[in-house]
Length: 192
Image (cartoon, rainbow, N blue to C red):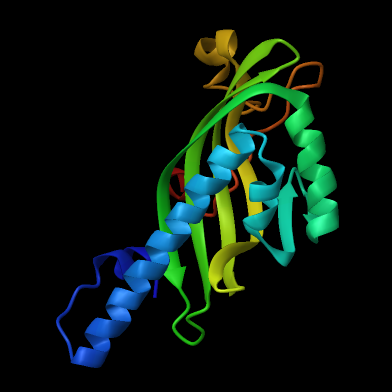
């Protein structure tokens, strides 16, 4: 079922169907809470809580590099947290599909914005996570998070940089093409 159909599907049913719908809604809310807790933990440099958001073999992908497993994630997040003096991640839209054949797995797309201070520069970012979730030890966790950016720009570059395709502009690095929306299969459909 596509995401739009899943979002619009509302129908009364049997007691079992209603119970399954309530369970799915509860699972979706638990996953949304997971995303919020993750953002607050990263911003608070709470490494233990950040790691607890991932399964034992969980993976995080950023800039085409995947880090997997608790030990590797520990090193990755320790490094990332030490890079930034202040961060504020604000989760926004979150579409979640609980797998019908295996209700202990799900997938989703989460978007958000962030303010980050890196090397004394205030950076603004719009991001998207393509997520996979699994229940482990009785709670929902990330089994995989893939981070992509619409932009990462110094605050003072927003007016001139937002319309450019090279919207990834970390300090002291060459400008790079943005991940989104240009990489989406539908992006150029209207140009045909």
